[in-house]
Image (tube, helix red, strand yellow):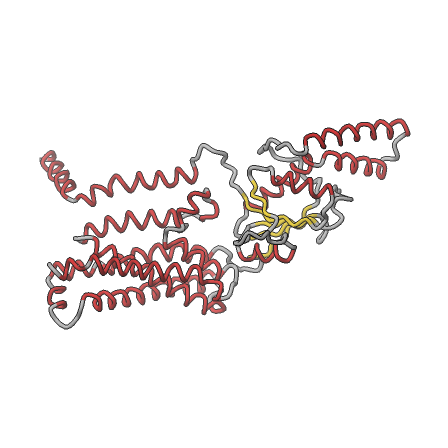
Length: 429
């Protein structure tokens, strides 16, 4: 009796092509996505974008900047990108801090005036002394990488400066050199300057070895998220919320398939209700349902995890409604494409889990490879999470949300129009 039962189950699975495809396609898709994120054959050290402001403009500071630019693990920017052909002015300290607050880069390095005269520091770092490292606390990895690279680059790109500073501290703490020692040291320094001059235009080989830390004083200062009570709660509320909104919207839109199977849809369309008005009504209902679900989730985050919700109400409403429109239209499109509830469940599960993994609902996008970050921009999740991050993490005004709001609303309109086009099959059935 066991073999006939197995045979019947296999035949049933073969008839349900959507379930059969889901059984094999979904594991392969997820494996491929996370293999790209974590299992690449290339250097596993993530590239860090860092803004560098050289206020000193000395030989030593310029050597340090060039050394940082040669590091393959860093993407060094000294001036904002310009849309026209005219070159934008270099970053100032204030502009670099504003860029970190806006999310243009996770780290900014300020080289103050006087650095070239005294690049080496002994003892604890005092506030306001040494290099200034401005960082966004949502990315805990980037400041550590930049700090390590700074110590390494200082030793490899500023050998003459380091030697001169070493002589100065030797004379200060140990006693002056004898005339013969001083003469020999000057000769060696001149030879080192000649070597450095010949190799200045060559690209130094990059290494991932840890640098001997502490020679350059670096004062790190958090400029984003420093006073947040629960810094990552808003991110996860948006990330998980959008993913489940997609599931809710697809399930709610599936009522269309139930109505088509029961004949209710035919009776509705035979009245004065058109398909366009019917779909628009269902889109409005699903939008309100999704927004209500999102509101409940953020209220729970406020009540239990101390999310600062009520000071961000305008931004939350704008992003919440825009996200709700996009996910509701996505659900309407899936329902119009599928022919049965089982097919809708299989297709929606496959697409939503893939979108959520690539779009940042399961793993932060800023930790993904650049190619995966760009791929995430084709998902509703990425734009929604970026918008909520601007509201709750960066405390930006509503006017700064126009890219995310524009993309989400445009996505909702396009998906609804496509769903309306596909739904014509019910009108002529």
